[in-house]
Structure formats: structure tokens, C-alpha cells
Length: 507
Image (cartoon, rainbow, N blue to C red; front, top):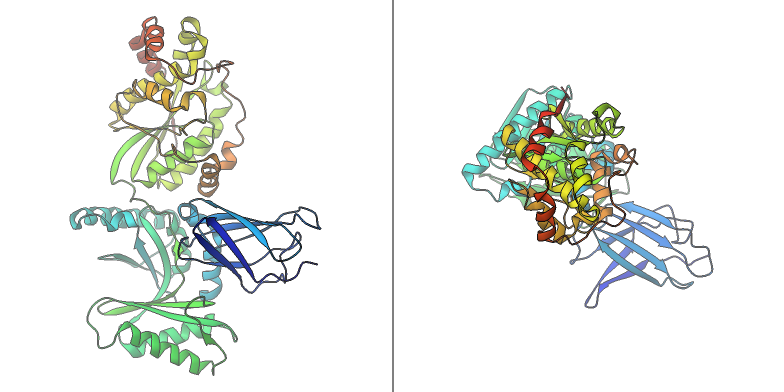
């Protein structure tokens, strides 16, 4: 059996190293049949979520073991290279911070610790996007946040007494604070939420509330920490709160718990305002971005693939409402088996959009694909097809008052998505083309699709485009595109395609 491993050094560049230290877990060893529990202590890698894949390569099979949790904002692949506790590891940087809102672990931890406490408030913290805005712009964003929070709570059937809006925070007074905090994680414009209990902003009341939280959440033998932030003038400091509350907790538990300021089992936080204070355990990561509605609307090109719904979601996350547009295959949209999946995807997006997506627009691809196949060179089919999509989407956007088009293009993933072809296709659009996925890897897009809830729906679609040529061009030339389009009645094709547009109502 492999000896216990208490330390693994991760070298991710020639000049620095990070160290994994073992924490308490059920497995005494790290080998091919067990899962290791580690905490990354590093100044060079930010905290977040990760997965650890451990694989034995010496004296054993190569069955992998997975350990996941809130460790580091990267994926870490650890490979054993001998029968001792020596490991090699490769860190692959990713962006789980963007998908932390979908991680159930923070919610499970918070619920376990605070369920049953007299929670009466949800604390909403703004995303970093709002923090960098001017005061006047922040007020506009905060108004949208309050309005969107009301709509989300109403949709989820969660009651509240009052929404209090102060600089830097929104406090929602509700007896369903735990459930509301979880649901509000899906609200764009927030960095995190916390279910909390309000108390008076005097030292005695704060300490008493902290002790109540500790009695409920702490167990003998566990460690804890008290954190305090304070706004306004008070007769005490944040350090006073931490010391007095910590001393009282130790006295109540008769020193059977201990303080750990680095990695406590339970972290009780206190937020002191001018005339009141809030005590809570845990911060639930939220969706981030800008409040929905603060940016101009966009036409979102959606397909049956994984990428385009993620791009549309990122547009929502930046505050833009979207008008989804799908170019269906065949003479009638009911004959396209992909349409059902598209409708399901748009309904998922509509949940994030708080019901703002009221219609799905469908336009027949045959309206421009048949002329292309009849008169243009086959290798140019994909590029010409995409140029017509952009022309039609631009015209639709003008009719709807949208200010741009968002697509799921990933640089180099398909023939029409090479940088050269993207330049050619973009030139046909009358409005800006937004490509939020351009620099992402497919694995990152898949992770986002899973987090927002569209992946399983997109995976139902398997039919490829029937018009894709055997060898599409990856570097179309302007001269060849111009020559091919000169043989096509472009304005007539665009007009007729829009005349055949179908709208499917979602609400």
C-alpha cells in the first residue's frame, strides 16, 4: 500500500511552486482507489473551485480518483511517478469563478450550519462590475438590481417585507432568508449572497447573536473564526467585536473549540452598519456581471449546438436583453427536429432573463442556402451562409431596436470560424458582432453550459448541417466572395427570408 502522503509540491512554472497540504478526510492515503483531500496554500493562485485527478502509474493500475471542492481556480492533474509519496502535477488554469454560482457545495455547507436559526435578512453584495462605475451610474445599476430582485422573488413564490437599499449593499427582509439567498445567486449583478440575522449595532447585542450562531453551528473539537467589517461611527472597533465575540464563544464551549484564523471549520461574519448589524455564516457565490437591462438589447443567433446558448447567456450576464434567432433547416420549421431543443434552450435562458425573452424568431435557412448551393463554389458555402445570417440578423435587429448581434463563435473551431473567415463574415453585418466565446476552449464552454443548464438539451441535437461541403475553405478571399455574391440577388433574398419569419411565443 502506498504510504501516507502529507505534502505534494505543484510546480506550474519555472520560478514558483505551490504546496498541497493534507486536510482531514476519510482516506488515509492517496492511491488509485481513494480520494485525497487537499487544501492549496498559495499566493500565486487565487482561491476558487477545482478538481484533483490522482492516477497511479507505478506498481498499480491507472484507475483515476477524483477529489473536488473549493480549492483553487484551476484544474490540477496529479500523477504518481513512483511508489513513494513523490508526485508530478500539471495545473491547467480555468475560470471556475464564473461558474461558482452553480456549485452546490457552498449552499450545502451554509444550510447545514444555519438551518434552524432565526434568519430574517438576505445580504446582497454587488459584483465588481458595479463597483468600478461612477456614483450616478451605480444608482442606475442598483435600481435595476432591486427591480430584478423583486421579480425573481415573486417568480419563486418567496415573500419579503422590505428591500432596503444602501450604498454598497441591498438587504432583503424575509422570513425565508435561507431559500431566498440560494435563489438570488442566479441574479446578474451580484457577487454573493448571505442569509443573515439582524441585530442592534451595539457590542453586547452583536456578541450575543454571534454566540447564538456558534451554539447552533459549532461542534466540540471544531475550529472557528470571527470576522467583522464596520461602516459608520461606533464606540468599538472591528477588532473589539472579533475579540469579545471570540472570547465569549470559547467560554460558552468551555474551551472545547479553538480559534483558527486561517482555515476554520466555521467562520462567523459580522457586518456592522450605522444603526444595525448583521451576523451570518458563509457567502454564496452569485452569477456576477451587470444587472439585466442596463445594456442595449442584442439579437442572439442560437443553433442546436452547445456554444450559442452560452454566448447568449453571457450577453444576458452583461446586462443585455436578447432576441433569440434560429435559422431552421427545411421548408417548414415543424420539419426541423432541432426546433424543439432550441425552444427548450431558450426557455432555460428565459429563466435567467426573468421572463424578458418573450419570443423565439425562426427563419428558413433554405431562403438563402438554395441560391448559394445553386450558384456559388462549394468550398465557400459556409462563409456565404454565415454572411447571409448576419445580414438578416442585422435587419431584424434594426426592426426590434437591438444594437448588435451575439454569436457562439469560437476561434478556429469550425471552418467558418477561423480568424480570416470571421473577418470576411463580419464585414457583411450592418451592426457590431459580439463573440464572447472567441478565446475560450471547448471544455470551458461545456463547463459553462452545464452550469447554466443548457448542456443536456444541446447534447440531444446530433444532426449536422446537410449543406456543409466536404472541404470548406478556411481562408476565404474577398475577391472570391465578391464574385460569388455578385451572382446572387442579395437584397431580395434577405427580404424574402424575413417575410417567411415565424415567431414562437414563450410567455
